[in-house]
Length: 338
Length: 152
Image: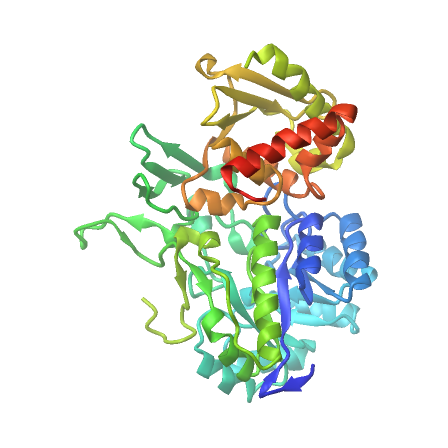
């Protein structure tokens, strides 16, 4: 890293759902790209998405030839008796020479540290480590080099945390923002029987139904649960329980019980995050298209470069890409974000 | 436009894309045999894509025929074109209600992800397969895009 005008140049960490998405991210200026395998070991285990071992190997060659890193997300929690799949993913990552593995589970972290001590470990947001004590534990026990912080801290808290931990910090700057208890969500599991944290699927598509009536009212369902109804012209959101709008006897109108359909966008807080000691800025969205990856990565690449050059960051609007066409700074500016 | 004139062109697109990118079917997995209704809402016809590995089909039907399908995706022709081409994000179109999906959502997600992994432009590749007619086809398409100001 180089140091200029009070900032350290942050690494721009970008999503890739497919090999073409990875090439798009690298070409758009990603410093690092994160991706997952086509199984339950990663938290975006969606149909048609992710990488075969051969595709991962080819993608590593593409990224490395252009000076970009590849991080492999092995960030779900193995159920009892199924550890082999996660162990194989770690072994593959080491054999192919990925630049880091993003882990969430203590057992997976321990296996990686024991079997492949040279393999760089990042702690996934799914681990939900947000205190200096928790993060130091992962660093001391497993040699974790970077923590991806849960989206529940203010920038001031991140700066304070930075002074107390022995590893790098990666912070989300754009994309989906879910419930503030990452790695502990059981809502999908409750409704569908499939787990976000163990099967890698939040709102599995097989259980999602969209119904639009003659008046263009869109009803979104997950299994038997009606998640939301959007009237004609109203922006829609993802079919996730945590962003559903529900009827409740305590409320007169349907209301968002947990969180609203909205995306995180920390464009305005970018200089503050860079001053707070954040090493890496993360863009969410492995389930999104190449078009999304290109637009978002290009916008943040230019902003970071402008700031590093001593100028102001001029952002093109990314509102059209946000869920519900709405943006939030979540908890990063204040804990009272709603 | 008589659909009889359109059908040979659609057959050519289906067989060319399937031949050029067989890995597309790996991403589709068990959904490769399903029937996807593609509904350009501003056109008088709809398409049914059956992306079977050995015999991929893309058939045009008059809208009133209501062809059988497992999943459906509807939007303006221009938006569908740009989404297939990788220049528009399908989720963003869904958020803005410019894209409607129904039926087997898992099949739709698999198809979207499979097409998004198509290197470069799937459409350009299909047009390129028309040999001496590729130039005129590309010219017509560019004219169409320019006329709606997409600039993509």
